[in-house]
Length: 69
Image (tube, rainbow, N blue to C red; front, side, top):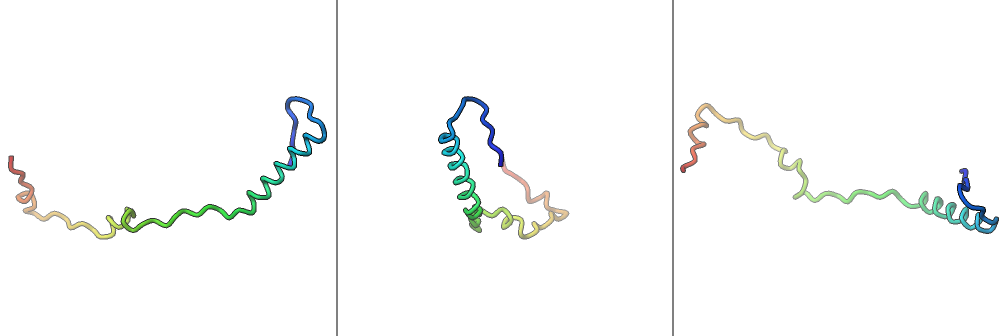
């Protein structure tokens, strides 16, 4: 790991403090377990809608699509 000071002139104490914070953050970040996604509720699962094939329309299905006005 390389740290480069872009602006200013930090004292050795300030640089050591900043480096200690960066190292502590990297250690704690590597120790944390990765976040897991919450399990989906079956009600909101879109695959349940497409789980069964829809019946294909028959030759007289046009007669059942009448919408009275």
